[in-house]
Length: 63
Image (cartoon, rainbow, N blue to C red; front, top):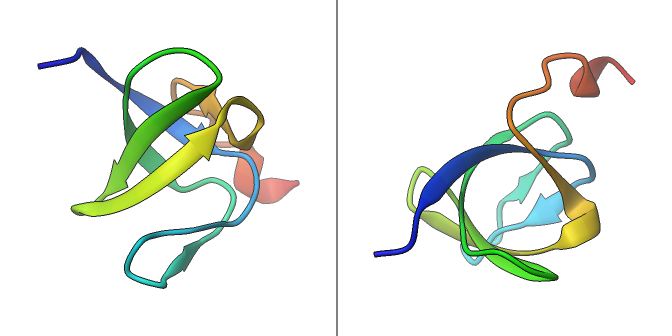
């Protein structure tokens, strides 16, 4: 299993379920490189490098 880490969305991103998650949402990230797999409560979000930051950033939602 690939290592998992937490990340924070920087832009709104739609999940496979159709739900759009706002900036500041905490995601579980798997993989490395230009694209990664991310998950929010089991919902899959295929992310590009510019759509998230590694780690938690509580101030993102305030921007």
